[in-house]
Structures are given as structure tokens and as C-alpha cells.
Image (cartoon, rainbow, N blue to C red; front, side):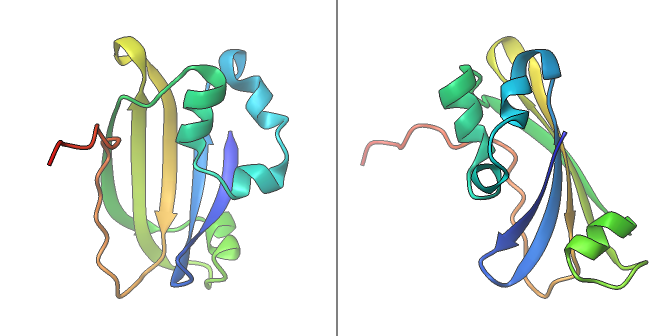
Length: 123
């Protein structure tokens, strides 16, 4: 499991727990914490593990955020926010990650697009 806090453009902070099979991705856990904090992990999985994210799906609902998440987001305990669960698959629709993301209360609209970007259409 890789746990991170993510700064969203200086507007708010989310937290993320990314679960991956240790047998295939154990090298990821040995990477420097700074590198993991400042990178798109989907790009790392594709480039360094030949495991591109080809399909994702998820669900979101309002829930009381857990104490560890509220501490990382500098929020009072018991705060409610958005909990998002995302399962991502690679080749053959094989699940490669499960992500639990916590989003604090925010006045901003959130676009939830679980699918990876496809090829750029020709103009």
C-alpha cells in the first residue's frame, strides 16, 4: 500500500491509499518517498513495470473521513468528505490497483473520470 497526500492546485489536499500486488510491484515501495509524492503513479506503472492502466471504474459517496486522513488534510476529526474507490485494470482486464481516495469538503466541482486518456483524435 502506498499512502500519499495530494495537493490539488493549492486549493485543497486529498489523501490516497493505493493497493498493489506486492509480488509484482514491490520495487515501487523501495522508491524514494519524494519521487512517489511528486509523480503520476500510473505513468510509473506503465513505464517501469509494463503495466499501463487501460480501464478504470469507481464509485464515490459522502462519508466520515478517518482520523489519519483528516490529520493529513489538517481537518478536525469527524469531518465528512467524499470517499472514492477506484479499481484499475491493465492487459486482459487484470486488476492491478485499488485506490481509496478521500476528498475534503470543498466549494469546487469535481470531475470524476475514471478512464485513462485515450489517443488524441486527429483534427
